[in-house]
Image (cartoon, rainbow, N blue to C red; front, top):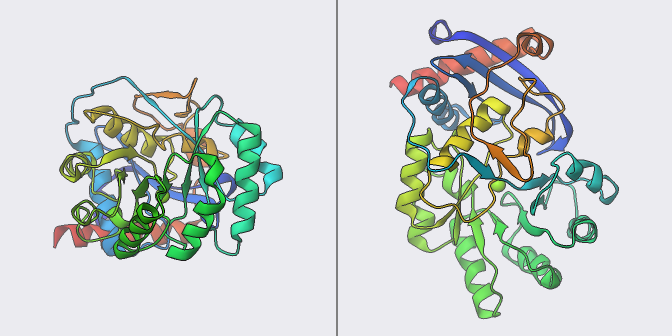
Length: 323
Ligand SMILES: [Mg+2]
């Protein structure tokens, strides 16, 4: 069994402050190598995809890390698809920030609801830079419709407005034809495809969103960032502070950093693995490693059936890495 190779393996179910990507708790596995590491593909992800996350977790646990070029990382606040009344409460947990990423196109919600949420953000934080993330859920026309209705927002960029690389290319062309200078970022089109550099080759985005776990670890993510030639934003995948530490190190190792990174997501957790979570202070998070707290591990341990499910998943992903 692969699990026997892991020291201090714990499966945790961490409650979220608000529903995010349709979930209310975030299940993760943590284990110890030279460093504490996290393996946390979302539960709906298949084994092939999740194996990359395991590769990243193993690399973080045991491999030497690239040199850091800075000691702290500027980060953005992240707003899930909450109602306008909840905007202030959610964003206040991020403290001071100059950029907000607003989730749009949540399943079952309307463009009008997205606009209401965005108007609330603008009203409460008139100076903030606003970026959008649709997780690929719009079609080209709906994305254009929303962008048109937000012409007074001066959006920083729009992350994965549509699902596929041809649609991203088409949307960028239509924006150019309409004289709209809005940058497009690719996330899923980089981390959920067999070749993460197709986006760059096809000219399908201006910005690459880079995440450590889906891209198989810091070194691979650094390589993709450099080879893409795109501007880079490092983001987390709603990990605990242990996983966020991986992302911070990646952001710290990049030659250049032009944007606030999506690494303040520990603020979306109701509970973390540590008493000293990686949360922003004055819009920055210090790069440091994280050790979990025994009591928190015990308190948030997943139910036995979920633990079994994760142990089997780890075994299957391990087999895929070995094959
Ligand atoms: Mg995204």
